[in-house]
Length: 519
Image 1 (cartoon, rainbow, N blue to C red):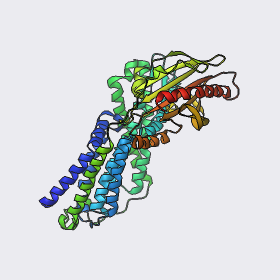
Image 2 (image 1 turned 90 degrees about the horizontal axis):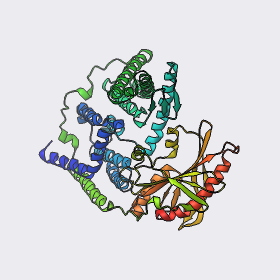
Image 3 (image 1 turned 135 degrees about the horizontal axis):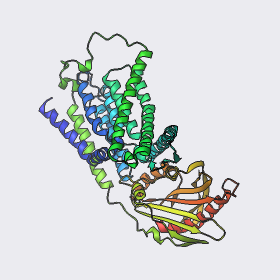
Image 4 (image 1 turned 90 degrees about the vertical axis):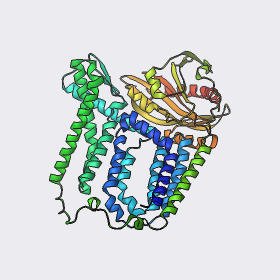
């Protein structure tokens, strides 16, 4: 590579690093602090090794630059801008990967990008998935691990009671939190299975077997860990579920999962079709450096194309700086000043949330208050307010939180309510209706997301509107509103009486709350 060409490549790399400096820094920070994605610290060197291992093959490929690559770069830059101002970290990280892939496609062509496909797959696995999807995955895994642990502990003739993801023993209680859901070992084992298949140059079908089998193996291994922790806690005490013993058990279970993955590979090779005879020539990825000079392979116009990409990246940095001006945080009264009297309903006292719960919710302000009206059951109102969601704050759905406390969903749907515009009822909107049960107790949960006078039932539409409002209004503030009504044992109409009570309160609440949140 000539000095001039090397200088252009350096400028190109520096341009990518400058545009995505905050994205890269936050991503590395998440890899370092979030054990669910700590494998990302190893994935980047592995991707670099895949490129180095394929260098001879890459040098022999014809150079056919594609304009689609430049379109992908521009599209990724726009995605970055939308992701930053719309408070969606996942979009910004996908934009980084898209920019690198588009640059490769624009400079070298489709065959070169295809040859690096596995490296890009590894990098994609290191990107944390969106929180609203992550919560949908981790909580079922928590419940699955809890149920497995309960079954295994009971099989050992140890008295055990499970409520949601909390396992209660005679001497202590164990909570299967997010970190114990198994998503960490699942992501790590899946990455290990893919790398294993690639490095051993296994047949394509065997690579699929390894990747797919890593999922049930990780779930099974995590269930064994929860069960083992419960048994140890019963005989040793709560210390068995904390500190070094807890961490060490995680490593041991992962080793067991790796052994099971090896057993699956051996079994698959024994039962599967015989491998084809090896070719006489060595793998081109490991062969000697191609005699074709790199300069000739890069072809004419490489420097021009690299400078075009750099110019697009620097222009994107300027556009991002202009778009991410200081967010317009609206004036906001503290939620505790919400009136104690709402229609016929009187407040019965505010409750403070536990510090650990607040650490999970990451709200900027909240209200947790009871209300009661004559002839009506007491209800609970929770409002969690987020001034900005640009730093990754995500509103937790009651659909995830309620089952964690042992409340099993028995009905889920939506119900229409009068929407509010400037404090008066205008059109109708939909809110979520959830019925949960613990033992003989039942609760009706009504909840929705509210921002800028808009009432939204869907988490996903709420995220889309966050991006739209961030672009349109330079605001990403929003609130989660939840109303809980106990369902009387005498209510044999599947909670219709509780629903009527909840809707009555919501109709009185909305005009007051909408004005309070700024409309």
